Length: 166
Image (cartoon, rainbow, N blue to C red; front, side, top):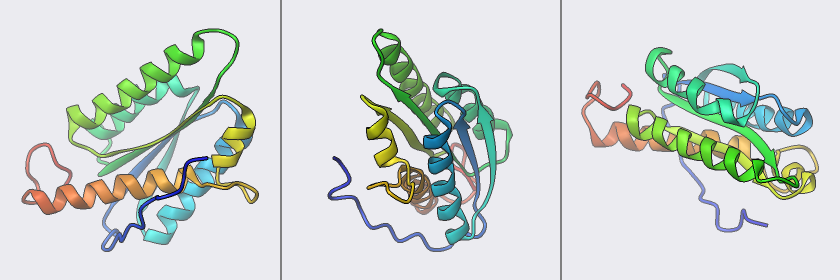
């Protein structure tokens, strides 16, 4: 399992940060864990946030883009899970959602925390969901990544610069 070598991030000064958590609704046990992990991380950082639900992983990019461009958010955290089945559907959805979320970040300059689990089995997803018996908490990690990138971008450009959250 991954998770070894994960960075320890120092995230000071996040009380002025506003985050949209865009979360799919498929696989409710896994998603409840991912959203709870994100909320715990955001509460611990003192950041303000809204949770926006979408039907599935394929819908994450368009709502993430709307949050990044019109929602007044400093960062977006995208949470979802796709579990491999017996058809190519898995590859199409994973590729489209991943490419779409990358485009949102690059096109808008708003950091997007990638919390989309792409797993072969439900057991793998549960192990990453941030549940009490899980080995990893990908909801928390996605929040930390998005906030870390936001703080990095703020340090690179004057506040209010085009393409960077202020």
